[in-house]
Image (tube, rainbow, N blue to C red; front, top):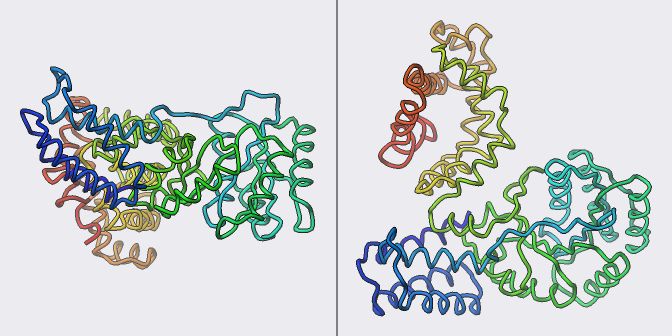
Amino acid sequence: MFDSLSDRLSHSLKAITGKAKLTDSNIKDTLREVRKALLEADVALPVVKAFIERVRKASIGVQVSRALNPGQQFVKIVENELTAVMGSATEGLNLGVLPPAVIMMAGLQGAGKTTSVAKLARYLTEREKKKVIVVSADVYRPAAIKQLETLAAEVEVGFFPSTAEQKPVDIAKGAIEHAKRQHADVVILDTAGRLHVDDELMGEIKSLHAAVNPVETLFVIDAMIGQDAVHTAKAFNDALPLTGVILTKVDGDARGGAALSVRHITGKPIKFMGVGEKVDALEPFHPDRIASRILGMGDIMSLIEQAEQHVDKEKAEKLINKVVKGKKFDLNDLRDQLEQMQNMGGLGSMLEKLPGMAKAAEAAAQADMGKQFKVMGVIIDSMTPGERSNPDILSGSRKRRITVGSGTQVQDLNRLLKQHKQMAKMMKKMKGGGMSKMMRGMGGMLGGGGGMPGGGLPPGLGR
């Protein structure tokens, strides 16, 4: 996420970080590089100009805190201004109204509106404990109505049916009446999009908004469209009283231009970001955490929250008790760990939230670690319970049977066993010596190159 912007900014700020003194000259040189980095990231020119000016003003005559040297203080100013550009504080949804609260989604076709409706419905159901009904008023694309029905079943929320023959206003009003009868808390309304902004689209969406008076009108925009995001955002903001933005496909956006531009252009907060195709891949937008990630400082808070939501606490407790008592870490345990990691978005997603691990996250993505972990899981599933509990019994004939059953090679199995041995060794360090020994073991695994064993990734994986 925002990899190229992160690389360029880190490189631009490197020269000034170690400076003992901030001068007009080194500030000017650094800001020139930062400006270039932002423009190459497709950040809108007015946003870049305003950002550079604010950093310049904040840097002049800055009082250096005792904890930071002048160079670090400058980086802190850049971080603060990046946060301010994206909105300073995290802003949630305003659902404190007489139910049902209506949330209307607007945006161009292909931005990810329908998928975002389902993701938001799941988020509100699971995190906010709301009863949600979704409805599609996209009468031009019957496939969109069917898609939403399928997604609603997947995320287990109510779906109000509609057809291409109906009028969008009638569909929306019908859904709201249905929600009242069902005592639902929230109605999420999916609207029609076009491939470009036109008068017909804007006229229809304005009429629909006036008819249902939604408490939230969210503009859904594809983060990967870069500079075009500015023009689209402005058009929708002029036509509708937007209350916030959902930024989609953020996981595929190396530049970050839309994230840094859209708040400045619309004056409306980015409330959520889509970070993958799965229905649970929607995160609240935290400007301070994103700024920290962009500058390569990690995002520990998001990692902790992810762990709280996705890690099976019972299994985790069981494993801790097991290793503390000195019991063997077997392949069943490794299988569970791989599964938990995948639930948290994979190794790359976890690494990019750790300070200084951006390069390791990039290496994990290039090596397609998610695929590698799936292969490891399939191999373990092809073993008998006895083999998973005690991999030492794996003879040549057993290995051949397992690889044939899993459609893999003996080398794949041997790499898996090697990885398991390293993890078992690390887990063993917990016995008697507590967490500090385990952390030292993890430090060894994360190695000098900021990666995992074998120079950046688990041994043998991705090679």
